[in-house]
Image 1: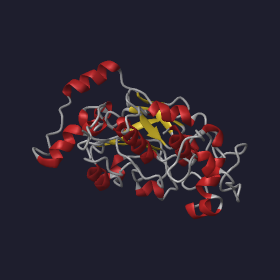
Image 2: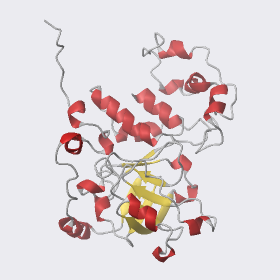
Image 3: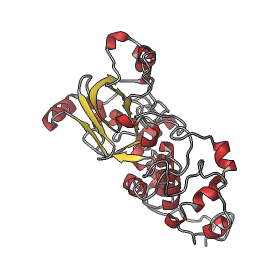
Image 4: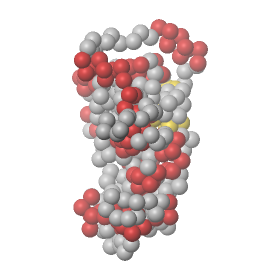
Length: 314
């Protein structure tokens, strides 16, 4: 799994892959955490010059050498003697791999970014973690402080985001909640919140956006995703109010809500859980068993420790 994490990060980082790999590891009985992603991100550079963080497309990547060529450039951080599906070992699979275009698949001494394309954030707004694809955001937002504009659900956001009466500026921090594993439900791909049209007309192309949702690896922008715990279960995201100040600091791996612990505790005491959506059936099972984003957004009963007996064993 560490090889897969290293490859994802050196490719530029897929936020969805974070959830998928943690879930796959959980079902395999392997403990893989957000801290592993952040640790490995500090050891591998981004070498794939691909959109949205770079300039090229996957077709260009294929003709530049594809995955074998790419993996050959991070071979020093891979476990080359592990078996693969198609070859005896990864070393055998990469034997003779070539890179045909050093601008598409960069050499180690001139990476697209010095660290892997994702950063794991912690702070009082995301005590269990959040992720941000920093290579795909305007670099001026790597450290940013601004007032929050909060949307309680995606449909409300869609209906009101372009209203000039909200007074949204490029310095504001857009916050969407109710879009996590349980709140969605299903953690929909809402994380790339739209920028108000009147700001787009002024030339604004990026803003800090925070949610408990996810987004596609082809999306871009200063989007903080997978905030855990999600708002639906009473995570701190549920307690943010419009006007609160939020600081994003990617270098410090921090996401901080400038509200005192006492005030957060007071708001938490006033918070009430959303009413249950499902009383029976698959929906009820899902809501009871689905885990948070930091642990793979998977059914707890499928990832718990233990064995399943072979029905054909004597």
